[in-house]
Image (cartoon, rainbow, N blue to C red; front, side):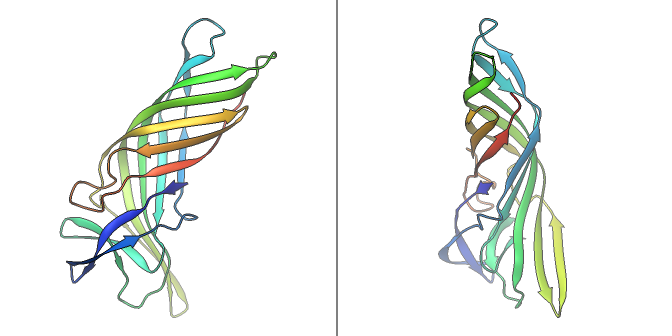
Length: 202
């Protein structure tokens, strides 16, 4: 799941109007990653401390609440309200990236050497692969899905912090992008916070 709150200026005729608060639909703003994790033990054979690393592919969906849409105009990306009478069922900005996390991990085990409690902290770097917007709406009984690819003035390089806590095969994680989602002056000044659940084998 991905959550982001945006303080930005509403645009009317592409001139800045009064500042408004644009929120995301939490249930539709999701974060998914798929990757491989390698563990390098630090210390002796039974040391509980290790480094965790490995490539992952990540996907973020930033789903807007209300009848708003993402627009890219004159070198800037913003959120504006729909003025053509369409009522959106979905309005989102999606991104995909490849990331490389590096975490220091503590893993405790029981008398049968099965994993019990785990705790991890570290950071990550990444690179944006692709981004796109998607609108879903119904007009005259027909459902339309408009998709448009583009950079949307988003940062290409990503970096941030992340942490995990888990018990046996269930792990909770949180991830925070320290750099802004958009390039300076080319979009809302906002960071991304992602959190959720991971499943691991013992």
